[in-house]
Image (cartoon, rainbow, N blue to C red; front, side):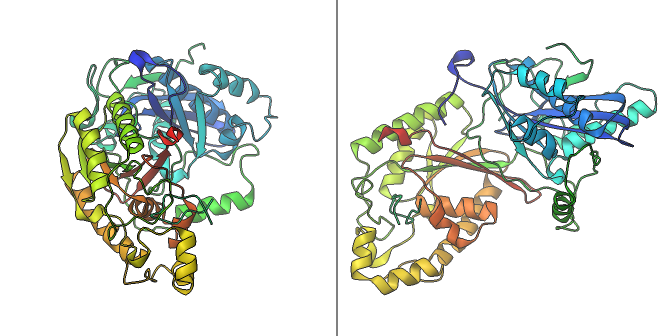
Length: 466
């Protein structure tokens, strides 16, 4: 993803804002909670919460959004912000897809839209189960209001945010079209009076937090929440409420979600080889080509981008020449060594190695049809099936998550393994491999949490090179 604006020291900082609001009675005693997170580590930078008196649920949700955006702006007014809320009403209205009709919400929405310039904030609906941090803050604010007290951070914050001081950020610190897989082809404001706290610090240096290695589409899992949100004004249809309820109870027995620093894999496809623009199958059983001059340029640009972001702590590569060469260029720029893991190698495409999709269609039509229809089918000549690749990648994932818990690691691999990492994290079927496009030297990321949750983030920094 190309930086949309110029930030401090040439970087654009990225924040995730999670916000919630609730009303016990709707209207009734209400409060909101909001948290600003570092998207690379999941750590809390700022928390905000406030008891609002008697208002509706939707008003409380908008007040939570406002507090979260203002807290993010205090950290860096030039940042890019991704808002995640379990209020479909707020998300759809702020995204411009639903009209805002209620007179109490129109001015709040207008205020929220003015906190950052247009285009600097994106919105995403998440299940209530994935919004537990903001939900907890909203409930704490309502509980404090019921006691006649002002909200203040509770001890549970440290437990939720990576466990004590080791998981906090102090001032000045940086937080630790159809594509045949393997071919690389795309063929067949005023202050609200809320109390805000920088977690673990009295202030946060705007240059301290490091932007995420990747931000974009997110799919997250978590535990059932406490439910600060009420029914609200025109917030959900009965059908939408049923869907949300079904998602909440789908996984009985889950404990509280782990919000500590995840193992984050930044997935980098190698740069171009001479076979890439020709759209030929290039797996682990072929000629093992090196990078072309274009591929080396792509790797250098990725290296520069990742060096600016400053989040990569280790580099692991597939054993094939093109991945080791790409990893070496990036690691040299980052001052890191390259480890090699056999599990990251590309699928073996058997007799199809070096052929185009059309050539395989002409020479092995029945085998190709079977391969497209079933993940258990192998390429002609005893290649590796997608099912076998999936087993290998899952084992590699588990081993690397254990080895790099709490760290951000660059994995330099190939089309099929990277797609498989994403497919497994999303719980998508095997046929989804044919519905993803990965350009040479493109980047994706998956964060793995100890509670089993995973979030997927996609961006493409280098595809414009061709």
